[in-house]
Amino acid sequence: METVLLSPDQKALKINLSPQFYGTFAEIGAGQEVVRRFFRAGGASGTIAKAMSAYDKDFSDAIYGKEIKGRYVCEPRLVKMLDHEYGLIEERLNREKHPDKQYFAFANTIATVNFQRTLDGHGWLGFRFQHHPKAKPSQVTIHIRLHEIEAKQQQETVGVCGVNLIYGCFFYHQDPKRLVTSLYDHITRDQMELDMINLSGPAFEGVDNRLMSLYLVKNGMTDAVIFGADGNNIQPADILYKKNILTIRGSFRPVTKVNIDMIKNGYKLFLKENRVEAEDMQVLFEITLSNLKAEGDIDEQDFLDRADILCSIGQTVLISNYQEYYKLLEYFSRFSKKRKGLIMGVNNLMEIFNEKYYLNLKGGILEAFGILFMQDLKIFLYPYQMNGETLTSKNVPIRPRMRPLYNYLVQNGRIKDIEDFNPEYLNIFSRDVLKRIKNLEPGWENMVPAYVDNIVKEKKLFGWKASKEKSEA
Image (cartoon, rainbow, N blue to C red):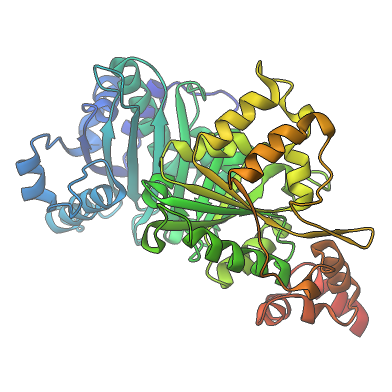
């Protein structure tokens, strides 16, 4: 393990002086900032077979094909570039002439900040490579958001990030977490946000991309990540752009019949709203970082158990560092101005009206609620049982000084009760289900949705394996 952090130029030189690495660079958008560092480092002739940029759209389309949506800074364009360039390497380079070479293709497609500074910089970087000469290629793709105010600064950051990506793939592929961390070598979060990463291929056998997503949030590289039912990470704009977004927050440890009743009935209410269309809706199951840390440091297996359940029932998962709901809505506003919905229990609503969460805001709770409801937000309220009483929007205990604000939101339809709920579910709590699973107590199977009990047993989730083995010993 290296004890000294190498500079970008030192990394580029080390790769150039390593006789086994050989491949191509294709860059669009921010200039040839990555390959430039390899040329300037020296010894590049032994590493670079080709470097190119196709800036004209007609040239780019002729080489890589057209994009259906007409977007050039997107993952499909990046993948087409990698497919084309790596294919040419295998086609044009004689393997008998280069028996010990590890071929690679680097590509990026970047949009830096525009002159008027009305559009933020962002882009896709990808690296396809052999981790040894006879291996099938592996691949890493990342999406970055660029926060510096000058295009030239963003170009420099892209160059450093690209070098870090190539170096990390070659020298850290056996330690994916180190690879991810190294992407920020000589880069700060103020310069760049890394909000999506996917690793694939034989070099990353056994790597779970959902854990890589969690690692990004846990280490402050981004505040939110999304992964789909297939377990692969998703760039947020790809599924949230101009969408109606409906979110339910929970521990999902495990998913219970209450969670499904909430999402089913909240979804039906949301569809009845004006300016909401089913084909333009994205449903998200959100787990916060604070929830994952509820019992101390994050338990990766516990996280994967929750993820396995949600993915198995076809859900899209959001992992966020937004404890306060107004920060979550600010995040959504990056991608969509359309109507949004939050599904929550009465107990969560009571927390929203607790002023202690807004001491950091100059405008306090009023500022937070301005952010929330300027996003055209609707809250769908699921009842909660407390001391034998069923709480709804009509009898929720709100502090007297907050009551006028609360009444205003209810009267204007911003907070709506989920009335078509199953009262038998109100006594189901995830913590009780989890306890029963771990203790092999009967009855928990009736508290979770159909097939979830089978998933828990088949995959031995939430400690069921350990409890089962202990009971059979």
